[in-house]
Length: 231
Length: 106
Image 1 (cartoon, rainbow over the protein chains, first blue to last red):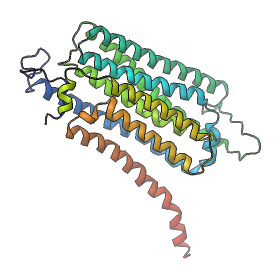
Image 2 (image 1 turned 180 degrees about the vertical axis):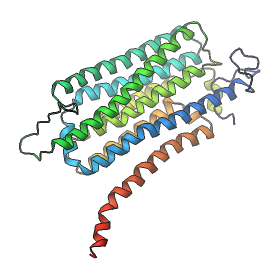
Image 3 (image 1 turned 90 degrees about the horizontal axis):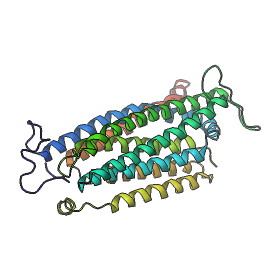
Image 4 (image 1 turned 90 degrees about the vertical axis):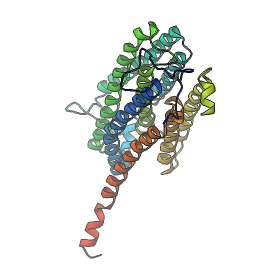
């Protein structure tokens, strides 16, 4: 079973460690269990977002041209910037865990703060984008008003479906980002107090997994929403 | 395993920076490719690059390449079930028109 294992301490294997729960043999087994548990949770998240992705695929098949047309109303520069911001935030998250592995508590706090700053930058850009959509009447509902590009097939009701999916998918993603920033802030104090060491830093690892998962969702959202009409 | 024993002493940052660089370059490539009209290939290339990027995140940032077999199995099954959901649903939508064709005897 013990095929992973960053934090196997020399000799004792973490026996008698303050963070070892009584129902585990050693810290390695405990780490293994928490990682597995986190991944099981992430599997439910895959299916949670998966429902929306499946809906997207079906409507994209059916309204292929109009989806590409409506996609041009999204700002590729903002979307691309946000992709880069999230990728960088994943790097700093991984570096926060690396800092725990080398027992540098201040470095952990620094990288967590940078990761949170990237997360908030993402949400800020998202806010600017949403505001633009409200101003241009592209939010589905009674005030939705889609101006078709001249000389092209005009199906505002299909474009409205595209924007419904845009807001559902990016909205659910943004909600996950907000939760993620909250979880990171919860790690700050224990990190500062030196609770996370090379021997034990399961909370950092698990919340890191969550953060990277949210990044993966955006990696798919960016091409599916922003890039389908670029040519 | 052997790699891991040494990594426990001086964990390397290098794979993280390389993964980050790979992801940024891939983002640029997917943006540039989308500018050209390749017909149906556009969607395939965009999704292919997204899958590559997601795989890099899972293996390196999420440490799955060093995880236990049980964790790896869990990860794969999660994405596999998503694939089932999408493909089985699509097989329904794709073949709905066929019923009418059969009914009209053509």
